[in-house]
Length: 441
Image (cartoon, rainbow, N blue to C red; front, side, top):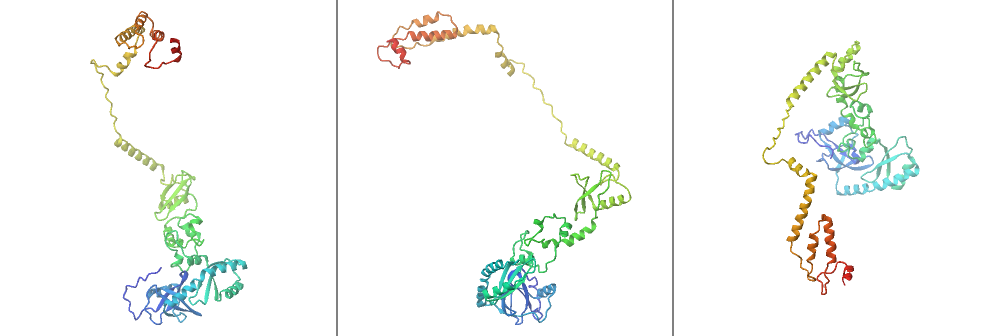
């Protein structure tokens, strides 16, 4: 249940126990009934209560001394108009009540169709059947007065019940339907709020909230009831905050109010609508206002004269110099490496020596290379030729010629092709070109 008996653990005398009980019905509706027979009831028990022209079933939500306090708060008199509790509901009562509740949704859809046919400007939100299935209460909301006499006749003849039409506000409609608020808890209007107070946008202005309708409105489409919860605290805190109706006059320029922190007692100003804001205390704002009334213009928001600014600048410069000395580090000089004077050569010398070549050295190196190649050829073993063995003339012809390197190679290739032996038998390797084979034959 949504309510809790905080005084249940206290030893209140049973003789002086308050005999009124709070009973909760569908949609959060609560009524008070008298426990005439002194039934032993606990919170959450279903009870059968007396209603005009029949009986109804509800759940016990509160009892004891807390009921007296709730009645005083809601200004309900303890007189003979309060009806009585018959008994605790048994199984038959609950089964009959379930049958009545099962008729609510079909009745709601059919009633909406009838309202559209009659073209009535009303919004039907909920229907509640009585436990004895003899009466139904229709809850609707409308902006203007609606003539529903024809509607009542149609509903009474179609559903064979007594019809009661009850107009509710948008807040009461949200409370009957229920839901979860932006705070993550169940809606206040469906749990404990009964008297809905008017909420204005001034409550949002006093609390420095942005006037955004999507954030300030609740599920009912109206301003949230919780805007009034902390309004008194803000109003008490605003008594120490001065009202600034015009900009503060300073030598640096007129300072306009941009923001106020009510609980920290700080106010932010900007010069000539600049982006930089400067915060000062409420006492300083009063002091500047008194100076402007007397015709005195301070230098800026924080200082009355320029002397104070010079002192602050000098002090800040000294602090910066101290920090620079504290965190400055001396750069270590790198030691130069001494060159090795021994027989070892440096990398630069190794690179430059082979690159420096004169023209004479190039000319001398060519015949030396040719002579080395000829020696290498002589040392190689001769390739065995299984065809003709008369291939000794090749070395004599090549050795006598003093040609350049490339010319010697071309001459060797031509002579080797001309002096190829004619293989009468089977060849070990296939010929490279078919044209050479035909010439040989």
